[in-house]
Image 1 (cartoon, protein in one colour):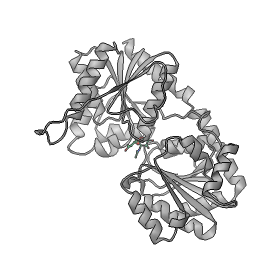
Image 2 (tube, protein in one colour):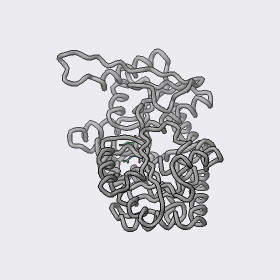
Image 3 (cartoon, protein in one colour):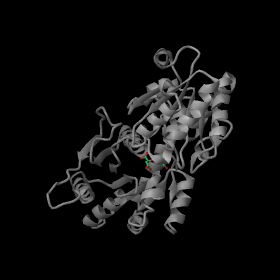
Length: 374
Ligand code: GMT
C-alpha cells in the first residue's frame, strides 16, 4: 500500500505513535509518505520506504496568520497524485482531519481517509465552540475513525453527538526497544542519584492539563521520608512554574531538569517510579513506555489510564490532586523493593501482552485493507 501520514512533528505521543506506525508499515514493505510541517522528531535516521514531504507555508504581509492548514491540504492532494497514494492517515483531528477532507474533495474522492483521535483534539481543542462543528463535520466525513482508548471513543461520540463507528486501536510500544535497565543504564544512574537514593521521574509537555506542580508537591513529601531525586523530562509552558514551585518547596537541589530528550529508552529505565499527575489523559503513552521498561507507575485515575495501568498490579491510580495518596503510593513503591519489582514485571508483561507493536500495527493494516477493498 501507499500511505500518506500526517502528524504533529513536535514532541508528543500522537507524533510518536504516527511515526512508529509509519516506520513499522515501511518495515512490512509498504510505502509511507509523511506529509508534515517538519520532520517528525522520532523519524531521525533514514528508513527504506519512508519519504518526507515538508509543507511550505506562504507568508504575506496581508495575512495576520499564515494559511498553514490550506497549504497542508494542498500538499496532501499534490503528494497523493504524484505518489499514487491509496490513503491518507491523519493523527489528531484538529486540523488534520479537516485538511484530509479538503484534499479528498480536491481529488474528487479518489483517496480514502483515516483519522486517529488522540486526546485533546477531542476533549479540549475540538470541543471549543469555535471548532466544534467543523471538527464534527471532518470526523463524521472521515472514511474511518480510530480512537486510542475506549474512553476517548465514548467521549467523542458523546461530545459531538455522533453515531458513527469508531474503532479503538490502542497506542503501542516496541518492548524490545523500551526495556528494563541494563548495566549501561545503571552506570548512567550514578550521574543523577547517589547510591541508595531513589529516582522519581516525570515526563510530559508541561502544560496545565498535566498539573506539574502536583509532581513537585508529591516529590517534596516523599523526600521528607526518603533520599530521592526528581528527574523532569520534556518542556512546555508550565516548566518555569515547576521550577519556582521546586524552589519554594526547597527541593530544587534534588531536581534534575533535562528538557526534551529524544532517546527516552536510555533514561526511562533509570526511574524507580514514573509519576504522572494529569487532570486528563486519553491514554498516556509515556505510562505505557514506563511499563515496558518495568518501571512502576503512580498516575491519576482519569480518562483512559485505567485501560493502560492494571490498578494495584502494575501501578497505582489516584484521584486528581490527591497529593497525600500519591505520596503514599510513591513511597510504598520506593520503600519496598519486592513490591517495586513485582509491579515492574506486571507492567512489562501487560505491555507485551496487550500493547506490543507487533500486535497493534496489524490492526491498522486490517483497517486499511478493509477500506481499500470497499
Ligand atoms: O492531546 C494532546 O494535547 C497531545 C497528545 C499528543 O500529541 O501527545 O496527547 C494525547 O495523545 C497521546 C497519544 O495518543 C496520549 O497518550 C495522551 O494521553 C493524549 N493526551 C491527553 O489526553 C491529554
